[in-house]
Length: 420
Ligand code: JEW
Image (cartoon, rainbow, N blue to C red; front, side, top):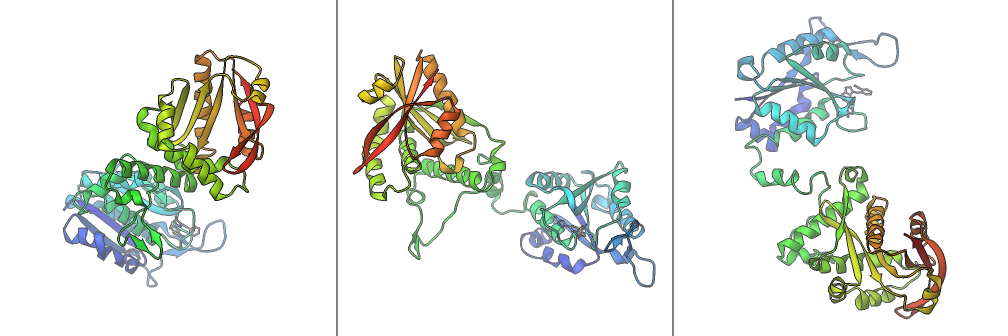
């Protein structure tokens, strides 16, 4: 027996779930030794008192340091290997004022346990434990004190937090999960991202279908789809998690045609006027944004296509086209030659404001400069206020207008131009 967890609480029965499920099995199998102690065993008075009124006044009660000190002294000299604890000792104190408890914390604690160390968890109640407890044990060289919060909400005591910590840590111990791949998968590739959506049988349930791609058996496309959904979901729900992942921009390759056609179909509607019909949008996508079209674009030496990636998922693209504007209205409005059209500029809706669009714009303009162009132009729908603001921010100015057809509708664009 090496990994040892001690829990001290005035409600030891609160920790009963540690008998169940995966943690219970790990205990039975001798992978982890969990001892739950009743703090009141260390009281000395007739009423088994553990708390008293706070110095300085205020509502509620504070837990006495003398009782806690006696309990923790004893618990911290027992522990694994007849008390030796070669992996070190951690005194973990759940509190709403603690450092955030994260997967990283769980990994560190699992490391301590796997090395034959001890984790002792002090579950407070009332308004918490007299602060001299953490001060005292922090000064002990053989104990590392960690005050942790499992989230920004207030519990009545540390027991539920202890359950959370133990569950997160024990599943990381060697030999606990039958399927070790699922632990490895969690910390690989899609590191720090939220999970992609998952589906199982049946393929149709209450008119809801499992996405076709997941049933295709094409493992490359499935992996790509999952990465895209994970990035999208993370951007929507937890943009803070994406902040640590850089946006990279690269030239699109021949092999990107499929990704680009999918991305184009998914993003085209973002640039359409709000009242445009589904039919008209679908018609445009069918005609102009097909796989064949993108294959052709990628082969065309007069075009340069760039893609923005986050954690290996393509989240946006631009396409620029060298040459004289064919429309005489535009030719008249664009002041310099030679020139190019920034013809497509799309970022997945979830990644707007992620930095992807700005990175794409900078890279696109840099390539235009490399080609010796004095300026570049684009057309943007007159109703697309967000895009016009974005282009304005990046130095584009309105130089004219044009009209064109999407499906059966006449649309009017602003023509914007930027000196390079
Ligand atoms: C949590 C332990 C013990 C952790 C997270 N302390 C304190 C305290 C309490 C209520 C209000 C203000 C302070 C109750 N309490 C705990 C709360 C952990 C204790 C007593 C805890 N939320 N709440 N993440």
